Image 1 (cartoon, protein in one colour):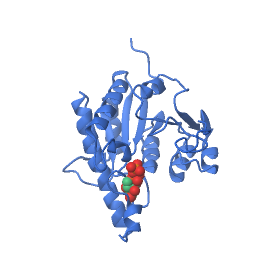
Image 2: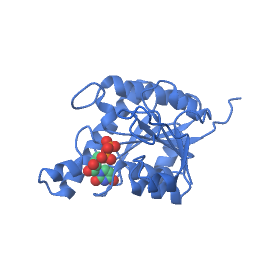
Image 3: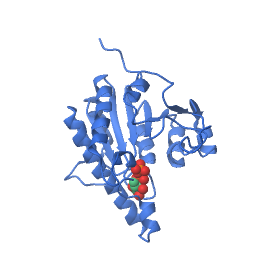
Length: 240
Ligand code: UDP
């Protein structure tokens, strides 16, 4: 009999920018294929997987507002950008031999399902990869906050944030060679030191619901499975 996973249900947050890969704009198919491979290992190990994807590779409301656009309109465009990314991920996940469902917080049900919590949980129980799109469905939020919210809503055992570096550092490791990685942090430390782990709204949400967060390097093959097997030396863990 297969051993029970350490984290039976996870929610993995992927930034839109990560999907750029080597491209200046858009979605790099090599990246979505890689993500699907990593997710497949988790699904094959019996882990239920939900994804939240950002839209920063296409539009961010804040950036659009800086060039003069109405902020709410910009945020609507940002949320629609996450739907585009979610569809690309759904396609890659299906091509890798899994079932997937995109569920959107904004109603756009000719291209994907509406987000209905009980249905999302049912999909997860059936081993389908659920991809949450449109963030929270509200302007002025981010997909980090959507990830914390959905993780709490669907009862995830672990919230993961995939980043470009292998955890949270006390300084930018790309600029400062003396920067060191934290193995663990409390939410209050992450909030007070403004470490940029996730935005503050997301951190408060995760803290108040005692969700464990792991920040890890997306591009390292096998890192996700190391975490899911209980290796606490991979990534940085944030807890209450
Ligand atoms: N967004 C929003 N509400 C949400 C989530 C996202 O309005 O609940 C908009 C916002 O404009 C944001 C954009 O969608 O900038 C893309 O999301 P995000 O910036 O979080 O993407 P990422 O940085 O993860 O690629």
